[in-house]
Image 1: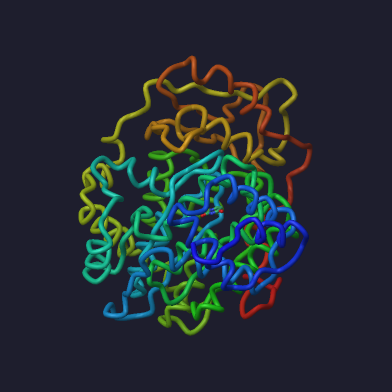
Image 2 (image 1 turned 120 degrees about the vertical axis):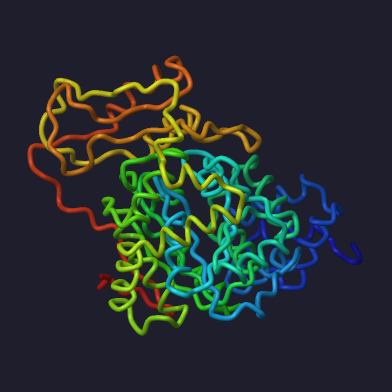
Length: 448
Ligand code: URA
């Protein structure tokens, strides 16, 4: 531990002072090696949570976490390697569509994703709902598949940012998750370790987002982009609306099925639009389209002519997944119990909004998500919406279907899911999913 004095560093942060990059690096290294105990790191995290970090401290924290593990070298894979990261939402199946779609346009996509925790779903759980699909490839297999196929989707290995793994678990139990510098350093340490050249960030704001407050979500987007640019990874962020669930499906297999339909060219409300917006940014950063409009057209045709779905099917086969269920989703069967939630006598009119947080929490408890890191998820559990914002509804109409292993699991959520649907006498304004775009340090509200 050398001359490291954790008590002094905690006191400096507690009193609103700044730490040097060397002090931050020493502290993170010593914690990762087990030389600084959890109780001191907990105090440090709380001091950062309450006092914040300036830009130089945040860069130093991200760098120390990044360098705690392997940084994959993908320089032998031709092309500009681009990934997308989302801060997490309800019904957010975008990665499942974007990775193969963008790869089918000629941009290599190496993607390391996470599992669902709390009310938001995780890409790994959705991928693993395909029988046999392996997300636990080694970094060697990850590298090889990217070179062969142009796309690979795996989970965080023990070599990637081990400091983050330890710190995140500690933050989870010390109420220190919702801090902009801690979130930004955590996300970017993992993303920068992937070996990417550019990154598109989907920063969600609204009731179903991790960061419901718009000002904080913007600050998070700015911090994420600043870290990316600081380390030479070109980064663009979209601020996107996450008050209502995205698409109709919230769960694992049901979201995979919706993603498959989207990959086969079907237009799914919000999902297709957001896929095209994020994907266009990836194509421009990847250097295969000169502008966003050209990129969007290209992506649209790759969805419609079957190329994106073909790349997806090849990725499923390469990672051991059952391609028969991907070709014929009905082979997967249904969950044991499906319970319909119907509109009450007062739910008469237009759907004004659907509370994404309530839907996400219910889907989690139905078995689609986990309350603790080591819980198992039920691939067939979840919620499919029968109505979306703007649709007309009358008492007795189906609002949603709950899919579970047993009817006991559905019972407690019949009311909360029903009440998640707010109605009004007039049709609400059309939903604008992309709120703003942050590129080269500037917000630009004239998004397409
Ligand atoms: N996702 C991460 O990877 N880290 C955080 O701190 C929050 C969300």
